[in-house]
Length: 216
Ligand SMILES: NC(=O)c1ccc[n+]([C@@H]2O[C@H](COP(=O)([O-])OP(=O)(O)OC[C@H]3O[C@@H](n4cnc5c(N)ncnc54)[C@H](OP(=O)(O)O)[C@@H]3O)[C@@H](O)[C@H]2O)c1
Image (cartoon, rainbow, N blue to C red; front, side, top):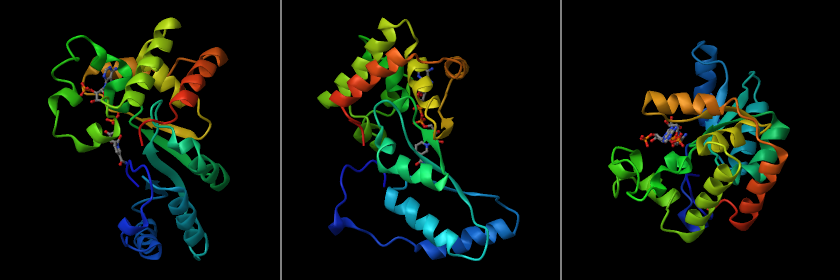
């Protein structure tokens, strides 16, 4: 699963089996190279199947985390995956918390944002960024602008709104962000200290119900 919007049985591919993957991971645990197992870009089916196979084995294999995209524009985790993770005691490592920088608001500047920012630097050459966070789609554009508008109305930095929204999620263990400049790192770290009021969360959820997870 990587940004797809639907499951097409005809495009189903045959991955390396769950048993075989866990065999390799068990060897790494036994050798002391890793302690726990984390999944990434998994689906509810993948999470439950890995867990079922891991628990059926004699060893003490523990799946403790999943690294999936999670941000204001991509809340697919909040559906079935959250239920699976809660019940299986698996934490989310939320990647792309700023939707690759879009939620900072910089791409909405009149000049299209800094020429050295990722989506400008790699325009036309960045498949994941451009297909997943496609600002030419009206629902992605309106949702992003609506979140920026909430931040402005409540006097919060947009980066703080985006990061604090994720940090408050009870299943999130960590936020995997990308900073390419020191000032960005400082902004994101400051955002970790921000608490969003119930009123702001209600506003966010209103936008979410109008544009539910516009980015896959
Ligand atoms: N498991 C997976 O399949 C998977 C997939 C994707 C990512 N990841 C991991 O997750 C990490 C983070 O993903 P991501 O890079 O998409 O996260 P992100 O934090 O949503 O986006 C990072 C981008 O936002 C810009 N940015 C960061 N802080 C900013 C700020 N304060 N103001 C304005 N722009 C800011 C950055 O700089 P510029 O715009 O200046 O370049 C960078 O290009 C990756 O490095 C990778 O380790 C994992």
